Length: 91
Image (cartoon, rainbow, N blue to C red):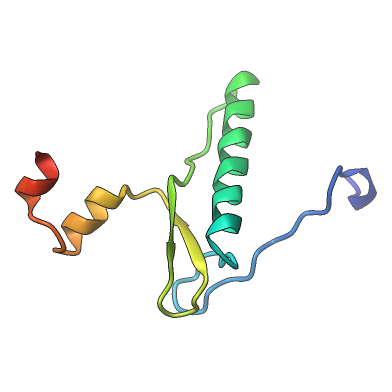
């Protein structure tokens, strides 16, 4: 498909040098990307195709100052990082 046939131009976000993940300017841009990916996944299901994994939240990167997307639930991250008790997460 040529660029002129697209309804809007594709914008590929810059990449964070520290993580290799796509860098979004702010939380609003990251949230918009998650919504767009969720919509695309639902379209794939409607067409009978296998949906691709979709990120569920964003977080601010300490290295680049931008926001990245992740599929890891916050409760799992906090547990792995040792920021909460595993009993507190289960309750």
